[in-house]
Length: 226
Ligand SMILES: Cc1cc2nc3c(=O)[nH]c(=O)nc-3n(C[C@H](O)[C@H](O)[C@H](O)COP(=O)(O)OP(=O)(O)OC[C@H]3O[C@@H](n4cnc5c(N)ncnc54)[C@H](O)[C@@H]3O)c2cc1C
Image (tube, rainbow, N blue to C red; front, side):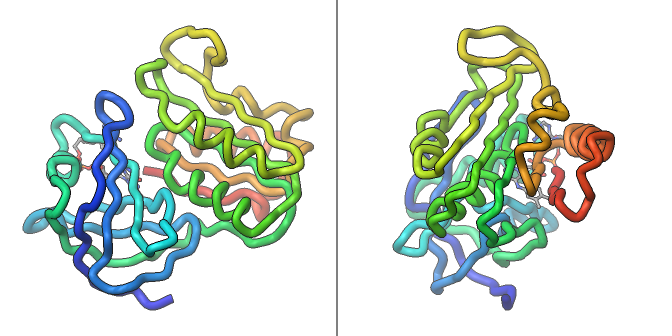
């Protein structure tokens, strides 16, 4: 798919947590995308940052889920945009692409690693897949949780859906205390054909090591880290 330079005009800005925003942009020209791809925004001279597409609307707008990193050079600029303002960008691009096959898939992520996994889950539903799906997501505390209802609404479209949310730094009803990698046991790993991982380098490394220990061939494991 050709990489295209466009301007992205902010249409909707919605806070999801104390430091995470959903930002929906209209590209200046129609763009196609595959689930798992990202766009590089040119936020200021010398400040280019990549953001995964969380979903594409029917009208061709792109939604992103962006954490405002307090001392960051780029994310405060993106999160500081208001509807009507635009930013140059390039893409969509990337290799962390959903394999479009109707086999069981387990999506495992932390923080804003949620975005590409959500797009991949949504695309699996849009393609009408019937295989079992798993969505395993981790954040620090209940204040950092978002999109719980949306994930369950999509999950209801599969024949079997497992959703599990983890909190690494606190306890709260309905959540497991611990790390997303705790989900991976011989029993759970044997239920899925493909594994999609996205989040911090430490989480992705730990999940890949655990999957290797569980003898999941690396050809069935796809990942992106940031
Ligand atoms: C392929 C790809 C896709 C990405 N998709 C997304 C996405 O969908 N949503 C998203 O929010 N980000 C995403 N990122 C990360 C994004 O590109 C920026 O790195 C991030 O927004 C921080 O940029 P910054 O300029 O604000 O901070 P910088 O000025 O680059 O960093 C400032 C400091 O903050 C630290 N830091 C960087 N990121 C975080 C973080 N998440 N939490 C805490 N501290 C941090 C850095 O280590 C550094 O010390 C993606 C990155 C890649 C490579």
